[in-house]
Amino acid sequence: VEIDALLKLRSDLNAKSAKDGPAAFKLSVNDLVIKAAALTLRRVPTVNASWTEDNIVLYDDVDISIAVSIPEGLITPIVRKADQKGLAAISNEMKDLAARAKTGKLKPDEYQGGGFSISNMGMYGVSEFAAIINPPQAAILAVAAGQQRPVVKNGALAIATVMTCTLSVDHRVVDGALGAEWLAAFKAIVEDPLSLML
Figure 1 (cartoon, rainbow, N blue to C red):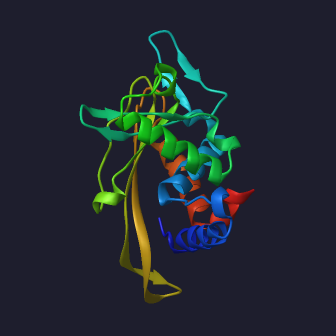
Figure 2 (tube, rainbow, N blue to C red; figure 1 turned 30 degrees about the horizontal axis):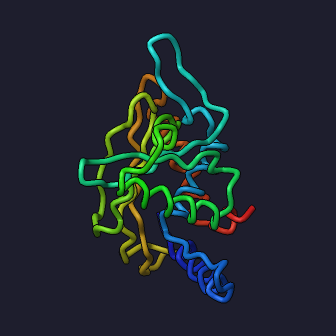
């Protein structure tokens, strides 16, 4: 996924926010990825699902679990109704959830449930990886670092910042074709980041 436009939007929004004093926020790439994934789940809602022994559960709400590293391993605090929240709200909520996760102060309802997960290792410089599904959820998105890479644009070699994203799915719920449809929709949103503002 090419993210130069996303990085510019992030930079512009952070610069604008810096003038807001105490009300300022600082967006991370992960905040924008959460919002993009949430909007994609609205466009391809059959991926927002879980497997049970009795049936497949489709969720009405877009509740996204975010993998956070803690000394004991991983915990996945949830940004609830992420598709309905603005970027600043997602950013502030994620900072709070991550801080409390690291100090063991999350309530069970803040990390149990969710319909979809994101694991972001971009901050470690990882170029690509596959994440393990968080049962009973049907899908998890692995997000790697944005790196400058050669790309072909209009028949000519160019340089773009590219972020590799890998979707792992439970094929009992989400088959390869549906997973590819979700990834294509996610890529379209990330590469046209003004759609995150709508």
